[in-house]
Image 1 (cartoon, rainbow, N blue to C red):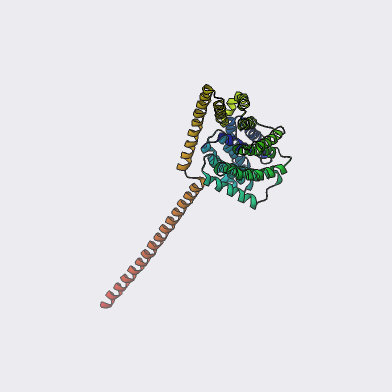
Image 2 (cartoon, rainbow, N blue to C red):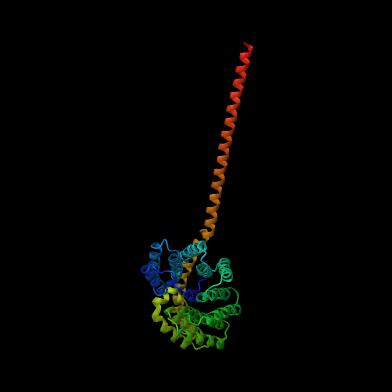
Length: 379
């Protein structure tokens, strides 16, 4: 099942990574890539166009290509085009692996894990996240990139929030928070710390623990003032508060909070947060026994959710029917091996034919000489 609220949060965790260090010497391409990175969430369409242009025009620069592909994977995910997101990230992962670029391997693998988590294909999710964690443990990351370890914990927490229970999920959010808190001078880490507290509050709300939920939400509120925030984070924060008010049966306060953010409905609809808002509004109006408004928002929720579910279904169908990048490589390698064996076999047959032809020729010559000698003796 599609969970738009969680989808938006976890994608923002990947506010992308020091491109300036990998793109020196190509100022124009770097500028375009920096813009693409900056507008992933506000304008994913334009971000995709810019990243594609940089990728096309940087065939000799693997760092630019990797950054372009990871931006593409993130922007496509923001549009809920999971199929194209996975294709871009698989390509990035293969390039990073060939270049022994452990940092971008971790980025690509972690994002791949999240895409499959969106689709609820949990075996793939765990596989990619375990690969990312193995690389992190085997290769020391510089301090500026330690947030990647926190990202991995955050995604695992999301999975456990969906598949197990919130108690286990909170344990992993705490691990992520511990990593992010150590990176005090990193805006990326601050953003991720804000999001981790926000998700933790949702777990407490789900467990009907209002006091702990409020503590986490207040921590998130304090951090969000310190970061170059995006609308999606602020909207998500308000939705979390609306859930908190609903838990405390302050239905009118919850509705007022949601009404304020509905003015940003255009931006919300790009990330799926509109589904969450419509569902909460319908529940609040039902609790207030306002049936006409309950029916209105309930229908909006059902229609919008159906649209996202269709997109999810199409992505799952495509991914199931299309072999993964590794499967394609294995199939290609197997075909190459088959051709190699056939060629060797044919060469051996040709050598044997030549050998036996030569032996036959020599035998015929000997027989002819022998017959000639016998004829000479008879005379």
